[in-house]
Length: 543
Ligand code: NA7
Image: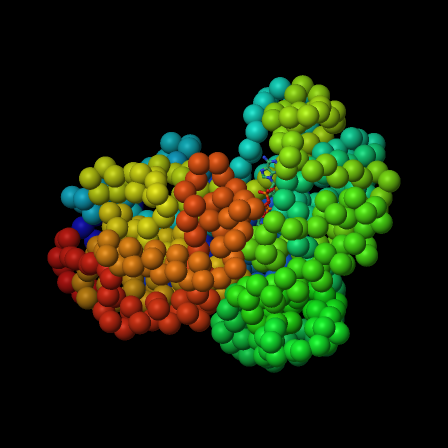
């Protein structure tokens, strides 16, 4: 290599969540020198930061994991939907077992990354003032890593404030306290029942009610795990073929295939009993495509809410009516609706009377003031592009990534953006919206293949063409608008950035399924990385 400085590394990864770790493992396999900069003091990414009570996966453990036979052989999951602590411990085990911990620098928050055309190198700096140079800059930042605090005045509040996404390491004690939880997305839905059990009083501030499935989590026994080891390959194959990357078979029927209402109810009830994402994916295959199918599913859920929540007014407030089921990411919960039957829980609908600000003693809506000892914010994230906005990324000719994406992200396959040579995003904006580790496996092995190909052909610069990025972005919009998911925009869906004021409304993910993405990406690879331009800056040739 012609480039050298004390801190030169061929591939610099940012982050050590599922994506960052899997990237380090792949680069090791390819013999590419690699290092990851991690803001936390340990690995885990999302599973390091989101340690609030109740945090757990909504995907079955065995395919919410990396496809690493060495790890699979030695790791055991305790529950179908493991808690944060277990997933974080799993990722730490992955780092140990695959021996990549030595390639990680912890407590290194990356603040900027700048490309230099002449040397064909990226310079990456961190908050602590360290500087690294690299050939390939590989951000693996996660989709949900830039928290959104949507109202001002936090510094005025005299009590305690906690973000679910920046939860302290120590246990937070809610006993005897008046607590507020703001937000009823996945994080709110998981934390609310547990806070309610401890707090003297809990007030939940809800803007948009969600469709919440009972998780039906359960422990896994040894028999199940043994059987699972035998069919691991089959489970992965199922996940890879499943539209959203879950190890589930299609229902094999649509709304029109079932004529009687009773039979439909029976099917929905079965899905409800299995819980979580089984409800949407194992009942009818056209729930996100056919309005009638979606209406039937939505009404079934509203009936469940009415049956569970004793106070009819509260039940009505909890019932979503402004968006189709799944057009916002549907949370899974445990005793979520039941929690509203407790005497110490109040639900406040802030849709008509928005929260305006923190006050010294609590929160103020446009109508009322509320006093609290503790405020928990489960208010979501500046999703996908927001993860990138935290780093000042500068490409060719001084172009800022935030400017390039001012109207929404433009990438090819979610891995490369025109104007940012050798920035290889590991599941950036416009990668598939599927069970995350499935996307990670697909993207990382594909990127590994490309890096190998570049090396074999003596290239050291690669970049998506503008044309390919435009076409990819168009395809993403086309697919998205053909589904009912696009209707979530009217209810602040983060799929399109609608939860953040002023953010362009553009689909942030590829909704064409895991297999669809894998096929598109393979086709590109098979055609000599069509849609990318590549070159030899320093010559040298293979080897
Ligand atoms: P989400 O799903 O974005 O949820 C954020 C919640 O916070 C949601 O209910 C929002 O209501 C609410 N929110 C946001 N801003 C406000 C204001 N200003 N006032 C009141 N309520 C507000 O984030 P999560 O962390 O729960 O889940 C993220 C993902 O993690 C999840 O989907 C899984 O993939 C895991 P809104 O719906 O926008 O009206």
